[in-house]
Image (cartoon, rainbow, N blue to C red; front, side):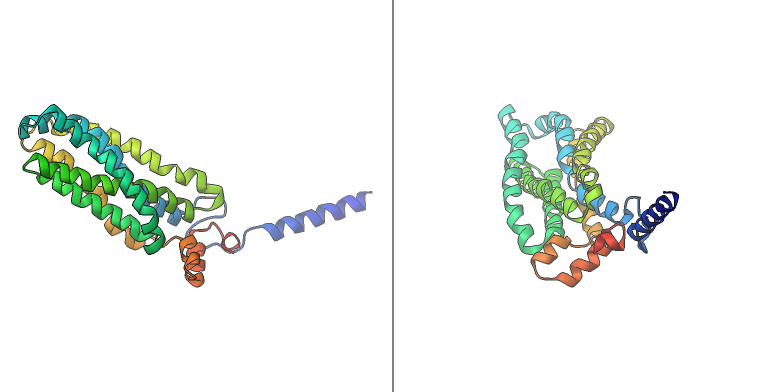
Length: 247
């Protein structure tokens, strides 16, 4: 009996050694979170901060906009609500766009669209241009709300996917808090300047995404659907916890 138990223990140890992770690269361990994947997920989720920021900052900016541009309460309601309405259109359009040009460049479109919208809002001399900026920014918000979770899910290892796909929600809440902080910080400036800065600061995440996308890979799932198998394998090796997982 003792000999049989010893043989079973030896067999079990050999089996565990065979299942042990092999050579690991790109600065990540077998049990930790892949730093490259985390960086890409953070960059993609940065787009989501603009929705939260707009919710927070607009609650204070409208007080100064109404006084400075001499607009009515109805116009205030239209300008506030227009972003949410057109974000629906943006989210519907982003699905086709991401399938056609890829997840990575759809993120760029989302960031660029919101950048244009933020600049229009910040420099708007009248209500029509302010509304135009809100509409353009709403399209960008819709794009980012759809594509950020999709991209994050497609580059995340199975064991870390739940954690990483929650990042866009965290960024939305963080954006709301940031909007309140900016409101408070800029409220003491002249009323013809403070609300412009409040809305214009929303362009910062868009610029960060524009530079950050150079370090982000394309979604391996999208690459496979386009028949670019070799490229997909290279991306999988980078974003996986081990070579075995990538295979």
